[in-house]
Figure 1: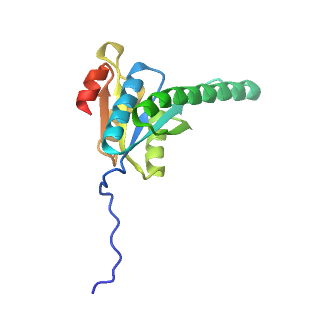
Figure 2: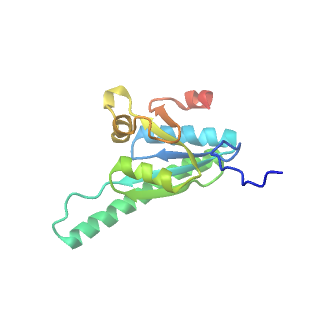
Figure 3: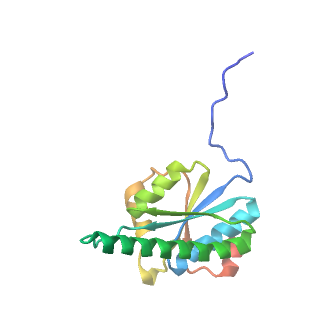
Length: 167
């Protein structure tokens, strides 16, 4: 009989999928979060919402910098709470909420590396008239196959009916 420990795998176990949604204050982020919530509710999965705060460029006076930073984090938390309400209405489960500070792409990758429960990265794509979003541009130019989980890009102009059909 072989007593070697089983090798750990990252194979999918039904009901244990976590969708990490990169969110900002725009409609296509909300579309991506609805997509993830609908998929999670239909598959028994979970949703995590991540908002990345880029440090303020104004750093001349420490007190002003600290105030600007505090206000930025307050707005980020309010945004996540607002989007989480919609996720809860679709999944009946409160999503995990994360706010990170730094360059957006690097912080998304860091969150994925730190939280091994994340299985899919979901981002919303701005409609063509609005141009590319920062996160999608960074992911496309920097990752080139280095992301260890699937990336789902959700067109930001999908209707709720289209989202239901896709999920």
